[in-house]
Length: 336
Image 1 (tube, rainbow, N blue to C red):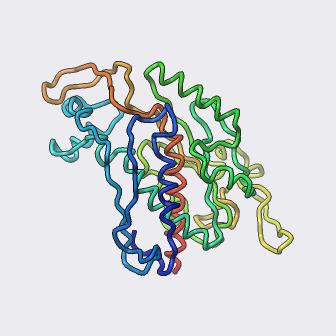
Image 2: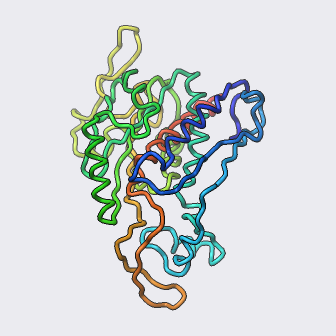
Image 3: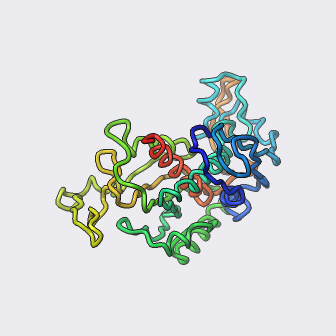
């Protein structure tokens, strides 16, 4: 990580704890991999404090199984990057574990995100995220006008973050059913930010939505991003979608509703920033599928074994939180 301000105390214990939240160890719906994921700071920190040079942190892959992927070299897996990566990089590309397109890449993202989360606290910003839905099972959404401290604390270190225990139980039951059928399922993560300063961002490509979206779409399996009312605003009238201004008791400008998701004209308004990120179903399923053999030029059927998540959202929700923190810290540091 380059450009971090000097003198920032980084708690590596918190980095380790946050990284563990994306571990597959927390549920039967996750991959069978057993990665310890111990982050080791190599440079950029002195006694846990930033002092100028880039911060370099390393984790080792300790449970790789390259043999699981040999059979897919010539027979690309449906909805994976096998085929397009072969077109782009040729036969030299190493797609073991998904290669550079793997969900494994969210591990360093979460390390960087944990550091960003700690620095954002110094600016009074709190980031929280939860599983909004898996399939058709939905958790209750966060309040877009005011995220309670109780909700933030409830979700902060929860491996399976939901606001409704009933919804969480139904999600687990659905994933168990899907896994038993050899299939997978997608879902949505919701991320909200309270206390982020107003006036950050800019128009067009400097907009907050633009800055955050490119980080969100860097998370494997992300297929959609929306802010505030998002796509549902397309079904509203202006009188329904507009967020009216008022002065609160402290004299600050607020809006009574927050369909704009804390961003107007690409610039933060001071209201909570609200984003939702949609994940596709994991393409690795044991159900037989059709593909092609790039070596023989023939059609071929296949099924995928190995160790795979039934649904990435319970782990990826933490990557969404990390991505939000990284994008927002970039915006703050860009203003100097």
